[in-house]
Length: 192
Image (cartoon, rainbow, N blue to C red; front, side):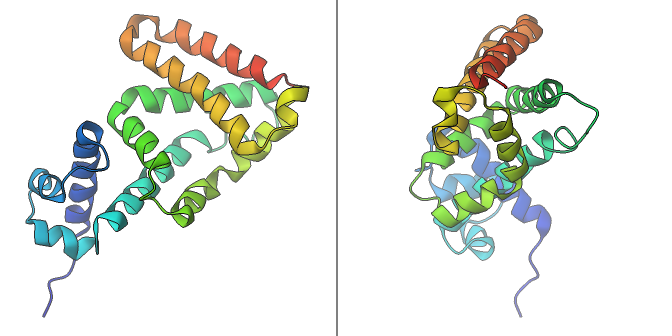
């Protein structure tokens, strides 16, 4: 009889995958991931049928974590102005990225990897529907209003990534960079 799967082992494998992929990229060997997780390589394949399944699960886990950080109540509070709601989501995103540089790096790598399926990418975006709708309502810029939402999101994401990079290099200026990055983000939207 097969042993029941342990949620702790599964999480250890996903955490190890994050650490190894942050260093070696998506081509990281599963043997190295298993070793860091403290399991046999065969055990890794008890939890994930193959490496692509592991990468897709890791992508979905990281997107879920980021969504939980960014989206809650920031956009639903009716008493907030659009700018303050956007700033709250921005601050949460930047704080998460600065606090978890390996996760941020791995999420970026997986987001462009051909090993992550379109189904996983679509599933990863499901919880961001509210955020995307909110940003669409805020866009006042004629240029951005005419562009597809993924393009606008990527441009705004690039501003956030630059902000996080500078905060990582110069932590004492966290507030200054975060505020300046948000203002660049908000002004790029050209809100109505």
